[in-house]
Image (cartoon, rainbow, N blue to C red):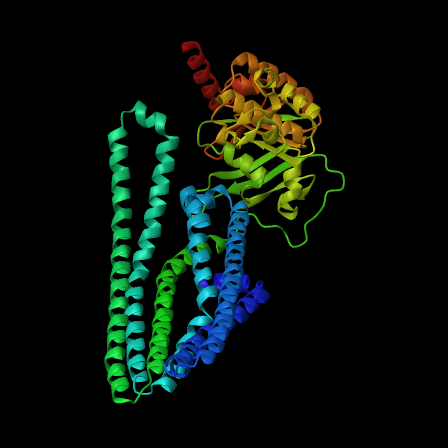
Length: 577
């Protein structure tokens, strides 16, 4: 999974990676050269008292060390930039792909999990790439070169290095393998924490209203304890790795000094050679320790890559046709022909054999009990999902043959729960038309009966809107959502119970203004109020996913028992208020 995710991104960074490799190679060679220079300085300069050799060798060491530092710094900067660019590209790909998925598909992952996958999981891969780019070239060069050069300085002591390095590598790999399944538990626990936080923060009023504070605290404590438990397991493994590695390194150092000291005393080795050998040993073991951090990072990054691939590998519900058709002069004539829809895995379809025709200038009201499929039908018309049977036609063209962007320019959908974004009133309205002037915004607000309350805000159009419109009332959010759609001027309006939070006076004025605004467009509206559909040109009654009646209000009251029961119940409920 990790290789599949990174391969195309790495291919786009070949030049940067080649520069990093060159700089790291120069830095590694320079680091290997320093112990040999140090040995020469000691044996041929310090021991013999040759000041000239000390100065000359010292200058060379200074140049080599400066080269090493400059190359290491440049490689580190390029590595960081490349790793950040790879993380940026993965985040962009995940975000773009999520935008193409339907709400039903997104529900399989959940919003908290998607947030974690786009942020925390990408961060793990980004950190791994930084480790790889920094270590992948110098570690093998330093390990191989140090062993080779150390054997030249002291052949017998090289056996210590040859024995210690495999032991250290095996120990690190064994600990890394145990971390792999634990990291999967960490990411799942992070998802659970995110999900609970989202539920508890957004549902705070309900929790307090039902006095469930202690229950929710207990739920969060359990999830928090689970995360702490798996994190502790990771921490214990990491804690074991560090002292274990240091123990092996220090034992190797003691062995080298012990045997090397005897060789120096016997005259079989010079002091400078022993110092150089210790330098090479330090470099070898230091490189292996650095590689151990890479081994620790790989399992978590691999788990994160698998989670990201799950999102990127999910096929979009709505795909653009290979050769999309174009409407030369669209009018917005809407036809729903024998449409059926079944949710994946459902035993029965939610919609069956739906026929509907809405001509420009007509308003059709959809009426039915909860769960009859009204909102689902509007979603199919807007192509938030594709029909499983039949077809939805706009100007005689199946919407599946249109590019999604073309269809979305023709259709304006206002949902039951209008979504506003953090920003200002103007920025939210301009989602409908980015090029709209302030005069256009005020006109749309006037149609939506939102002009007065926006004008009363301290900053007017520049008044802040918090995430989800939390600083506005339900009716204000609905009217701003309607204004945003009016600003877009679509040829097909889809209103899904968008007047539920309005008082009857505001609703009446808004309907009158919309009637004039949508005089040349096709309008389909869903409403739960008994009086709402009476101004429509035609009322379509849905029951259990089927059309069971169509006509005007008086006709349906006389002939359709389902509609009559809906009207009777709602009128009685309104009188009871």
